[in-house]
Amino acid sequence: MAELRPVFYISDGTGITAETIGHSLLTQFTDTEFIAERISFVDSVERAKEAVCRIRAAAQTHGVRPVVINSCMDPAVSETLAESDALMLDVFAPFIEPLERELGQSRMREVGRAHAIVDFDTYHRRINAMNYALTHDDGISVDYDDAEVILVAVSRAGKTPSCVYLALQYGIRAANYPLTEEDLEHDRLPARLRASREKLFGLTIDPQRLHQIRQERRPNSHYAKLETCKREVAAAEALFRAERIPTLSTTNTSIEEIASKVMSTLRIRREMF
Amino acid sequence: MAELRPVFYISDGTGITAETIGHSLLTQFTDTEFIAERISFVDSVERAKEAVCRIRAAAQTHGVRPVVINSCMDPAVSETLAESDALMLDVFAPFIEPLERELGQSRMREVGRAHAIVDFDTYHRRINAMNYALTHDDGISVDYDDAEVILVAVSRAGKTPSCVYLALQYGIRAANYPLTEEDLEHDRLPARLRASREKLFGLTIDPQRLHQIRQERRPNSHYAKLETCKREVAAAEALFRAERIPTLSTTNTSIEEIASKVMSTLRIRREMF
Image (cartoon, rainbow over all chains, first blue to last red; front, side, top):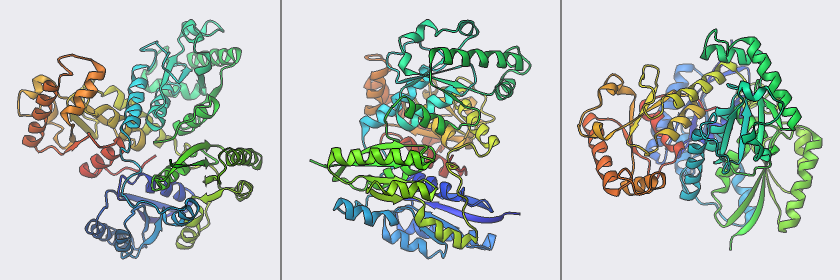
């Protein structure tokens, strides 16, 4: 049985940075099962002391030294956390000094800057992108003039989550177009998409997997039949090939990976939020 | 004028980890304007050499040493990247050795594990949570039995983006309930919400800001009037107070911060994806 090990993500903000790097690090150690807990908005020595109590309690419960992944800026807070006797990993510490030297300036010590609203216009653009994704979902609105990307696929191949992710994480206006049975009778792009060729990105999926997903949604329907799924996927792939639309299979691809590939293929440059 | 400095986020996967920590680090240096570029899926020495070309070109263009924030696992790839003469910051390196010592095991060297699909059931739950958020948006479906949290607010106070974020980032089934003018005539919870009391979280917003947001959506409507916004927000806040529903203002709060506060207040423990 894998060893159990408590992990605390501690931050003076949301804890997203600490958790992102911590998660990446810990996925590399497969012999241990980590029990993770997030303690966010630790912006005072008092709150740090509360955190120390929780860390010590976990050490007692599990009889093992906890790991703390810490992104707090205030040295007094970090010193207090160190009193927990956990293994302390400070996510910023190793990089600050080389950056200060290279850039010839000292860092700010403001807490929680990374995932707060720093700039209203940028934040607003992001929220608008999300509203765009929701109103341009599954062909609800067919005005693609403002779209930066249009994901094209058969129903349930992963268009909607990918669009929402592109919007939320990168502020990209992503629309999606569901290929209907009628569209798939032809090897040509539906008329509505032709004007937006350079924005198109095709998603495909293993028919067996599509069948499972559709079964959950509408059990034993014509729509969910394996035969239907096979035929639709084959026709969609033929269409993508004929029209030279860049394509990716979502079968084993996470929405993070889909988003990265879409952006690099269509050369959309955008920073993450 | 701020100094311009090119930054490259280089990864053998999506680049999300590198960019998250890099973004957090760089927001602490306000005298420099960073021009960021993401190079993802750098999983071979050949692709690393291509990246080196791009880094060197940026050094030439801007006449300054670029910063590389690197999360590649393969030492051969990292060595190749170092030939770019950029300031190399390896996001994992400082933490691997202490973790290996503490856990008594060596890390795996598999590339791109952090944001790939490692476990289908977990991934599926996440996608289902997103579908849940979309079908339980703005009172579309009123069956809240499966909800883990129900965000309650007047129209355009930030419910939908917050629900979608909770679902995408944490796999939480988040519904939302829009308070109508009729609901707001009473100081009591709408009947449909009473059974789910412990899942409720109220969002509020500065009326002036709400007015701006609604103006964009339906200019010069009764709905968008500052008077309407003031009245609705005051009534919603009175209701939250009377019913002791935990509340947060979204005016200066990002969806990341809203999600963190909702989870810590309602004690929902869930790891990030």
